[in-house]
Length: 192
Image (tube, rainbow, N blue to C red; front, side, top):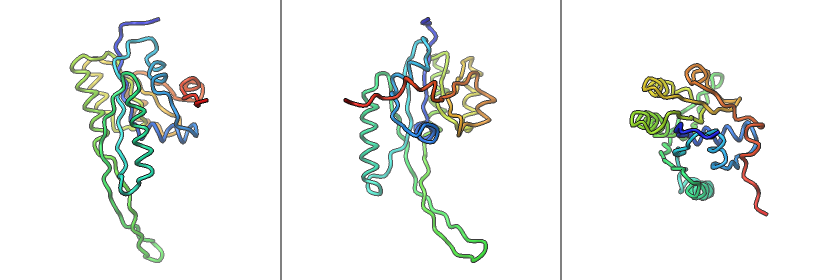
């Protein structure tokens, strides 16, 4: 049954990708079908997808693949993509036994969580939705969720069994486990 309740979906892209991969072994989700299923007959205003592009010069093949994915997202109705950035970091690990030093290089996402939190709060304040659906297992969103709820909005958390936050389980109003049964009709169908 359709209702006038307005819904906005916020997807933590990296968290979602790794959740799909580790819980289902595949990542080829149909974002339009997923958004419609999560909305459950309510009025879907928009889906926002947040991620950070990989560095083209460091990982040209992965960059190309990711750009194709972003182009695919551009064709999904009512979906907006917001990009952060990756910041290169390094740390030194020292073996406690032999004192050998290993330099480890890694990347941190910047601007993703803060953009999601800010957008959730700004849109709630502007009364653009009644219910926010957050697809993430990251407990760092607890303050933003509390702020959204304090404005009088509802927050639902779509999560994976592995990799979800106990903090989110305490603060959100409703929970949707993205298990095999729930996602069974949300996968992209292979081209024939």
